Image 1 (tube, rainbow, N blue to C red):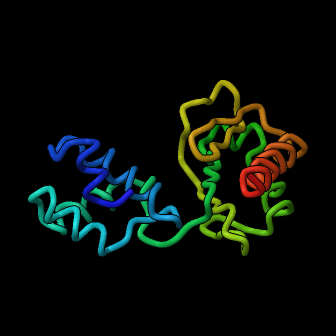
Image 2 (image 1 turned 90 degrees about the vertical axis):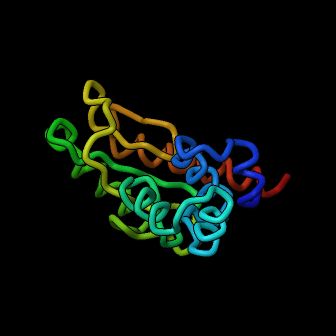
Length: 158
């Protein structure tokens, strides 16, 4: 989907900007916002590019640099830390060979830290794309990541 199609789908009201930015990022192919798309969006919506960039930079879910197809957000809040977040981070590092802010060489996964996912009752917690996983163990993390990788391979084969 291009900028005009996304705005047509969502509507050009300023109140739709965050959802439009989500759609643009998802359609980008590299899970990021591109300068040329933001400039076109400004023209289409009648806003300044600075206004759009300022909105996007305010929210941690948007990125101006390319990321992996799947975003892993690991919660570092006190409840998650107390329940073993460091062990989960070690398991992700061992499984994928990446740390916070890094992307796997195949561009499948990017790991990001987050301060809270709002699921403290099932700490430690991570979010992959839009799905939250709680009560994590090192074994469970490996199983989740393997399942996502298999699903990608199956989708690519179809």
